[in-house]
Length: 327
Image (spheres, rainbow, N blue to C red):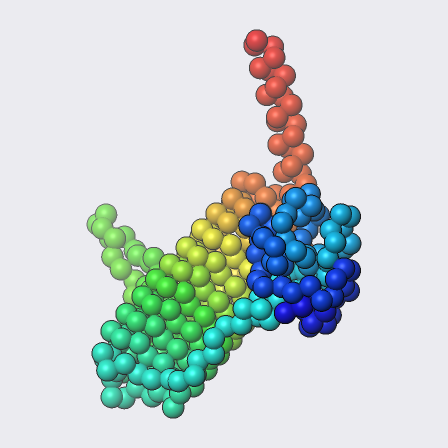
């Protein structure tokens, strides 16, 4: 595809040869002749000038690059360009493998893909154009909406409710019992959890993520939220709309997140706290109490990110000073 057509499809401004043919997309360090690459931020400009790519999608004109497509949102352009030059293969047929175990009371829409060695329990409902991979275990009274994609090895416990356009990656477990016990005679005795997990529309859940069912109420992941691999959501956690959670995050029970919350990897949350809207939690932060909306926090315990950076800078200077004295 030539640059003229690509620029038109991306609504970008073309600088360079409009007839240049592009064969494929590649990262800056691996691009070769006839490849199109991307400069997503200022920190990649130097690398782009050393790249062998034939052309670049950038957020602003860059010196010494002959062929450029300038766009307002380079990450959006990246997604569109991938769909343009490497479109996903559409599902042409839907079928149910003969090597499945489907309860006679389960309700499956006309167009459903069920792969081998998958089991579907009593009175479970699965919507049209949903695709379920191999070795998936779906319990009783589960509801799964339309256009969902459930990858191999997923387990979905009883009474879980999943909306439309949901993606659940391999190895995830949805609806697990919460970590609830009481003590008697120095023994831990189990508290049965009778709540549900509710996953709303357009949610994506990464591989090997575990979401516990509520004790009495529900654990909820609201619409549009994206969850990375290897996360844990404890019982009665509520994740707001359009949140983004990086990997290795742990939530204790009854945490409530507002909308549009961004959380870096390896963050941890104490139980029974509320996080406001538009909060940013930096990686490895330990959140022990409520956070108001529109704040950015880091450190342990979590505090204003700028204050945390100043504290670290002062501590670094003091350590250098003391080491110098000792030396």
